[in-house]
Length: 183
Image (cartoon, rainbow, N blue to C red; front, side, top):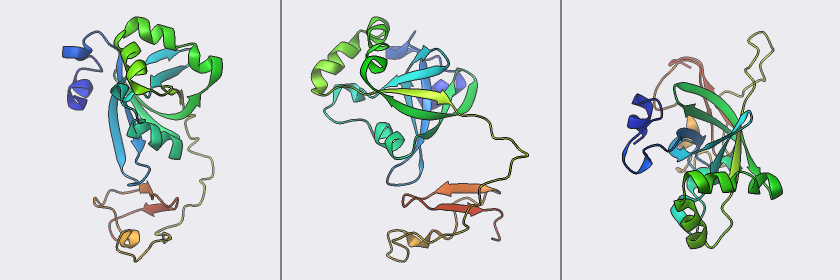
């Protein structure tokens, strides 16, 4: 479905025909790896709003745990791709988009009933573009994780692919940067 969404500019058929979809890429809270999920959304002024319904399951979806751990994410909507900051909406701010979502996708009412939990609503606000002339925050190169050498972390010495200027945030919170395959 992700490939179909990308190739068709966010328009898919089947059960999701006519439903606005976006692709949200988060950083896995445990793995530190990018995770992409298709989901319905609403526009709310300058931001997008998504719903952590998880098909009406009792637990929150993985992407919701990911944005709680790291609110920086990437959105692909239509033919645009940009960075966003995720914020869990609460109170009236959370309740305001819910009726519109139920109008557009009535099956969400069943999700709420089956879930037995309040379905979180998350706002996705476009992140400001970095000023190329601004000084960059220093990034430790190959900083050790707390569990380095335990086998679980494997020391984080090199990414799987050797892409230039690759930056990766490890689950322990350290940034790892590789500027070339030889570093």
